Length: 117
Image (cartoon, rainbow, N blue to C red; front, top):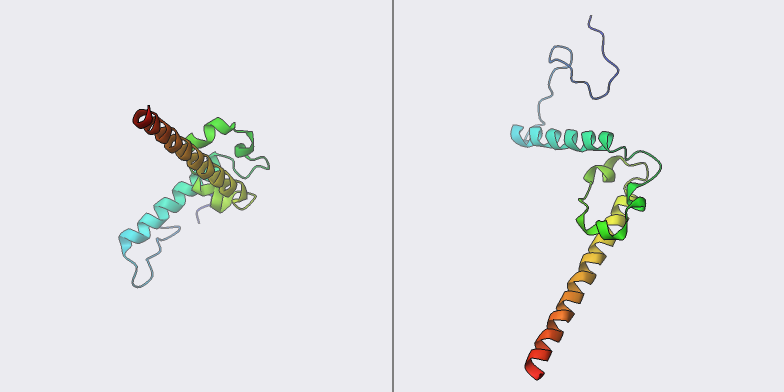
């Protein structure tokens, strides 16, 4: 009998762990796409150490918030259950809205100067 390895991300052969067929009514391509995405999120969670007690978003300066990419794995497996990631996303949306409003106001001022002056 083969010895099972302790690494939770270890792939087992089909002889040890046969593949599971999708439930009735689920397309095999959708079934596989789900597990590919699930594995991607799990790999990202493991490699980014989001399970640590300190949140990386608390350490990031405000200027880098608009360039940060959303980390969906943080919503699933972070120790705070995604609270910090959701807060960061709200902050990023608010910053983008503020930047958009200020550029609209700036454009209005330029147009007003051109028309009136």
